[in-house]
Image (cartoon, rainbow, N blue to C red; front, top):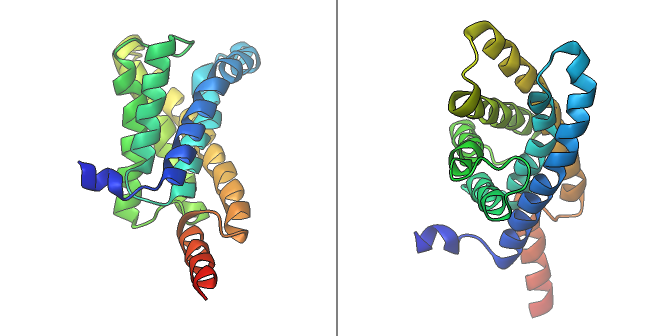
Length: 197
């Protein structure tokens, strides 16, 4: 287990903690706003809001650019909502409803052999994170019939995909300055080599 965490730098942990905190902090406001917009159309607000706060999960994992980053961010989110008890907390079940989207993103990117390095993996990362988030909340609490469930998951996929694209665009801006993923490591190596000369 220690070898797994040894792969991450202090900077990586700061980024993951920051993205988890932002995701948890914006969730109550985004959810309330989404309910006001989607309520009249009988669309579940949480599925639409999920695309917004799941983008921080995808963005954080893309910035770090290492296997397991999404799971760590999701774990920190679960710990935050359990400890603080803010809106979106499901008690001890938060470890299931928050952790599974992070695991899903890491497994998807492992299968794709990507780490948030392109628009495609961020797009699909957002989709799978929001689908898993909505599906687990439904299975634990709502247990909707098949047709409403499929409508909810379809909405979650669209919202999550948009969130993933937003995350990619932010990540792309950071990549230009060598502050994310592979380019971040190359940038640090160049700085280290320059300082040794």
